[in-house]
Length: 118
Image (cartoon, rainbow, N blue to C red; front, top):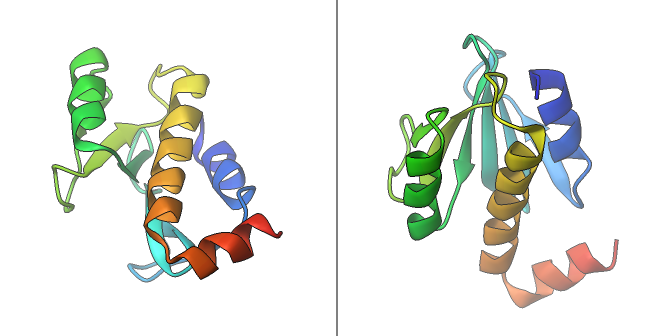
């Protein structure tokens, strides 16, 4: 999955906003003001930080050399993923979905209901 496809996939999810708080080389994707993905465009291959359940994070790191503990993030809850280095696109989209869902589940009930109504 290339960086543009990653961006399109993230922005296609309900309520997602895109920001560049760390400069133009880092796209941050948020839901209700909470980050679920960070795409580092200057990396070759491009990499993304994605939120992850701690047990699942360890499993993904064991299964894929392209997945490692989150760079500059809480390594228990975040993975850094080389998105354009042979990892099947379906696996990357599943990781994005999981990250998004974790953040949505953490939102207050009213915010979750607002998302579902869109």
